[in-house]
Image (cartoon, rainbow, N blue to C red; front, side):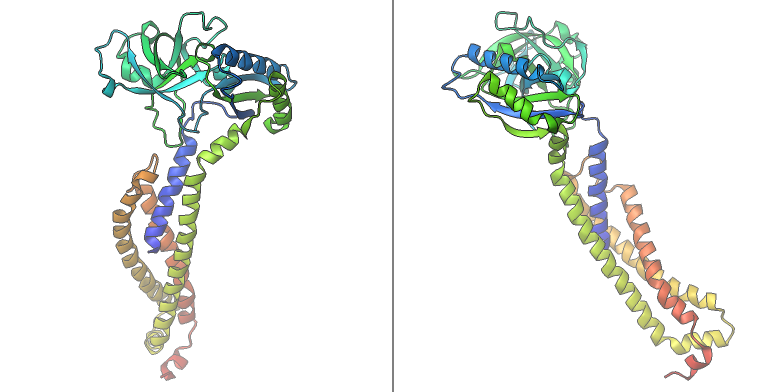
Length: 383
């Protein structure tokens, strides 16, 4: 059991380390986030929603200590919010039932700049991308890999459903940029298709707000709230978090799993260590006359230590081999919880064997030293 729990804990810890080492596709330093939900009765027209977002951004960016601000869609590592069907103009038509879906992100001009998301080709959204301008969009690198097929993505057009109170409304958009792939969940493998559209061309009622600050984001919370209130004193904000907190919340569940299994693994290791020490101590007591006779016939103390340690390590070795066989079968059930690590990760299994070997050696040390210090004459006289 100790082997199985240690293997499971090791796999979960290595998976968590892999998650933390993968490039999330953005910079989370000094970024404050909030959410805004505009009431339909006060903002029935899209022009009114655009007016609020523009005014709020101006007020926020005029606040001392704020470097940039933008409204946008869902945050990195925070999952999806809107999925919309799309097709590449000019490609063979696909029936509506098989139409691929993309994560539909409605973003402001400085969304990419504020979150530190690189535009690897083309441009970000600008002041000309308004409701009266040509419909445009930005795609991510996953789109280029799957749908460009060697073509220049900046020459492609997408027909993608727009958000509308009356229901999805297909709009043909020119691709003007390619954004670096952003992890949408901790275990995101980078294959999700994302289509970004300008906020001024499809303003919706719900939006996230991202604010990059010159210092601590937490110190700007009240100032940013006040700036939003200047745009609309009746408008509330919610989910006030820094991007560091968003990332921490996203990995909270895998961290908890790893910590919980690690606690049980440590307890199992302690029980196994005490068990090995107890069995060896009993064995030494039962073999007192034998060990005394060995020393009387010329066995050195180091020979007695080696004998007892060898018994302990053989016992542990059998347990480790049986445990590793069981762990190799049972850890397969962890497949869905692992990222960047296989259920039969060699490094983890070697480390588990090493830890248990060291524990067995430590557990065998006290009985071995006690046997070596025994007086041969007294041992021979014992019953």
